[in-house]
Length: 246
Image 1 (cartoon, one colour):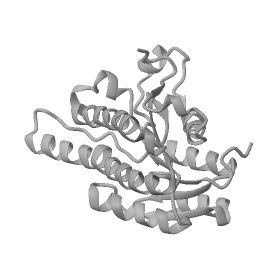
Image 2 (cartoon, one colour; image 1 turned 45 degrees about the vertical axis):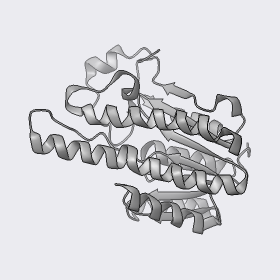
Image 3 (tube, helix red, strand yellow; image 1 turned 90 degrees about the vertical axis):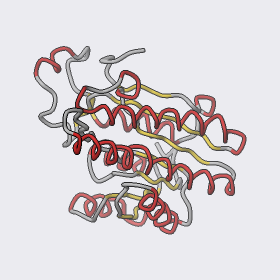
Image 4 (cartoon, helix red, strand yellow; image 1 turned 90 degrees about the horizontal axis):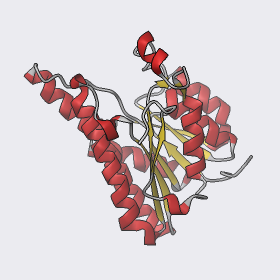
């Protein structure tokens, strides 16, 4: 299947987990992929070796506006433009209510990485997409955006909820410019970051009896990247194995 043949795609946070699975899948379907990570590593080296001349690397922190702008500029320079932005980079950063310094630091870190940086990447994408006749944005949210997160991660849920509102606003505001925007909201996903975080009691309670494979999330993202679901723009697709339904 080569339904993404030649399409230029930026996947942030693509050295591991969902991002890596997505980058590998869209490359396998013909895309040219800009891999993003904070820094080069054996993880990025292996992807680039696999991707050959249809792969490129951009590095940098996504902790706010300046970092996001630099990443976008680097990605555009790699292939002369980007047609699909996958805002995958993020982290489940605690924000404990009982510790004032940790609370403040948690909010600043969560908003910077999980909302402000993706928003700036979206802004830069919109500006370019309007000039080139359209493009696609896929924002990785979380089931926490719908239900809220636990007491120790209030800021994470709030940031991901903001990302959903941003996605809807982009779809409504820039559809006539050819900009399509979607959100994907996973639950527990089998990644390095989640390893050991899922307690046996939680696992036993999952309807499918297993944590969602990163490949399942990547399949949804890759489909949205084709542009074949234009009238689903503004929608959020849940990938939770029915652990959270609405």
